[in-house]
View (tube, rainbow, N blue to C red):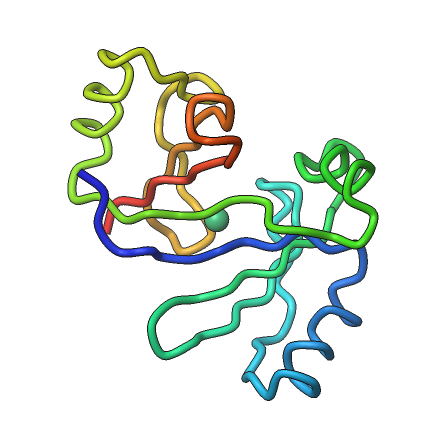
Length: 134
Ligand code: CO
């Protein structure tokens, strides 16, 4: 069902400091920060030859990554995103198998303008999984 790894998202407290680590220390090209108030995060993208890294900084009071950063003070891998061809078919198949889909179960438009869903980490080896229809 799942296809390519679309991105790995890393939650950070300070996106400027984190961007500098990727730009100066690791020699990557990092985009300018983009505020995504509807997702409660500010994001930069790092395009690697085979995938992307996204750095996420909390934005606003109800940011979904605030709790994660309380537990992971240095930041950390927040989720992995796999590509699927048909997100509704993937969702229905996963739900039929007992997996929990977060939120109201309906895809939302994600950071790349494509439909996404998140799956409960307890059902996926302790890792929050995002599915993105490509
Ligand atoms: Co993501």
